[in-house]
Every structure is written in structure tokens, then in C-alpha cells.
Amino acid sequence: MRQPSEGEARSCAACCSADVEQVETVPVEALADAWAKLGCHGNDITGDAVRGYVFADLKTRQIEVWRCAGCGLEFALPRRAWTTQHYPAERHSLGYDHQLALRELAETPPIRILDIGCADGQFLERAAAMGHDATGIDFSEEDVLSARQRGLDAHAGDIAQVRRMVSGKRRFNLITLFQVIEHLTEPDNVFSQIGECAEPDAHIMVGCPSDLRYTRVYKHPQRIDRSDFWDYPPQHLLRWTPKALDAFLRRHGWETEKIVYEPLALVGTASHMTALRGIGTSWYGTAWRRRLAILWWLARVTGSRLTRSSTGIRLFVKAKRARELEALK
Image 1 (cartoon, rainbow, N blue to C red):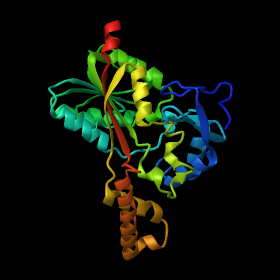
Image 2 (cartoon, rainbow, N blue to C red):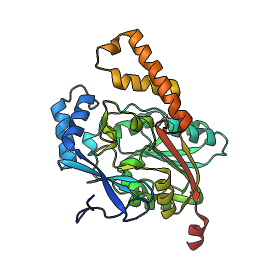
Image 3 (cartoon, rainbow, N blue to C red):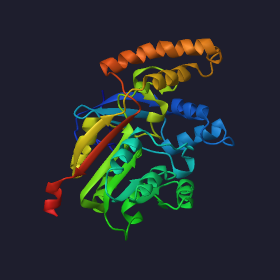
Image 4 (cartoon, rainbow, N blue to C red):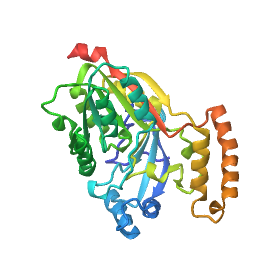
């Protein structure tokens, strides 16, 4: 395996180790075709236009994925993301990581919360209903407008400018980032600013895709090489493991308290894998064949859950502000 060339990142973004190796080379054309086929940029946007977005934003013909031997973080080179105007449309919902956070907040006295990547404010709304003082930021003006129309304190702008976006506000007791950290081009920059916005006794909650999720374990048409097509630039730039998250958070003054994988839901996983493998085929439209496929997948994923070889989609981490760091201030 070759080493990163001059001008590329030479160390792991999580633990800073230089012991990294290339594990994938993916043609951008394959990524562009996958995004064009998905059709999530709007009905009025052609597949050719979407392919153009991918090539324009990545500015390269191939993507390399490198893996850290120490913490397992996988990172893309070049690390380039969608421009704001090319970002695909998303349907927002509260996932496993949001639900874990809300369970804790339900038993927590009112605190100040900063939700980075708040989308249309569903999490903010639930937290505010519990009596918490919740503020959100997101790059999507449309989503932020939706949140504001429901009376939420949401602000639109570049997440990489979090400090500026919340200037004038008191420090926060809890900072949350759900499905954000895998998108960051400069995670150190963002987390340095987060530290300046946090109270000395603050906590942070991070949700991201699980490195052991079942869509990486089982082959399906939406996979390219070792992962889902959306797990490459311009969508995802970093693939986090528990060890990588712990190392990265420690470097930024946070002590990990809890790391939880989303459990593998048998029926949901079997149904999803059946759909991934079946949509667009002749057999998927036949009810009995679809049910038979679900039963086959149920047997297979049951074995995965027993051996703990795969998980649900998400990974959740909670950490507290390190006392040693505050003592030095």
C-alpha cells in the first residue's frame, strides 16, 4: 500500500497516528452514477446534472480511503464535501442516537443545549418541550426556516463557524452533533470552537453511522466496494469507530462516559435488506416471494445478532468535559 502523497493528510484525523494504509480506491464515476440513480436531488434535476454535481464538488476522478492501524478511523482522500447548493434533499427523522439523548434529557433539570446540525428542529422541539433552553444551527436555510416557524431558536450558516454563530450567547451545558461528524472536512477546527462554547461541566453527545452496521456487513446493490455509496465523498468523509471517537474527543478535552451501538432490529433489518436486494427486480413485486426473502434474511441476521458481528445503523457517544483541561484554564 502506498503512503499519502505530498499535500495530502499524513496522519489520522482522530488519534494523529501516521500508521495509516490505503484500503480502497473508488472511481468517482461509480459514485456519481449511484447518486444519479437515487434521485434525491429533486424531480426537476436530471441524472446528468447530479453526475455533474459530484464531479464538480470532488474535483478528482477517484477517491482513496485510508485506515488508521491504531484507532480504526477510515478517512477519504481528497476530503471534499458537497457544496451547499448541491447537497441532496433529506427526509429528517429522529434516530436511535436522538432517542438516547432525549431519554437522558427527560430526567435532566433544564439546561442550555446547542444542537449542531439541527436540521428542521425535531430534536430541538422535543428538548424545548421538556423545559430545556435549546439552540440549533444548520447549513440549510430551508430547514432552519422550518424550525423557526415552529418557534425554535435556530440559525443558518456554516457549521465550521459555530463560534461566530452563537456569539453573544451564554456557554452551553450540552452540545449535540447527530449525524454530523462524518461530514466534517475540518473536524479539529469545529471541535476547537465547540470547546469555547461549552461550560466547564458540559457534556457532549455525538451520533454517527456505526462501523459495524449491517449494510456494511451484507452485500447489496447500493454498496460500492466496502461500504454504502453514501459513505464516500461528497457525502461522508470520515468513518468513525468507538476507539477513534474516544481518541478524538480526548484530544479536544472530553472524557468518554458511554459508547453504545444501535441494536440490530431483526424484522427491520430483514425487511430493509430484502428491499435493497429486491427493488427493481421482477420477484420483489410478488408478495409471497418478498415474504420468503424476508424470512431468509431473518434467519441470517439472527445469526449476526447472536455473534454480535453486526449492529443497527447508528453509533452513540456521550462524553464530559475533562477536569484537567478546565484546571489549566
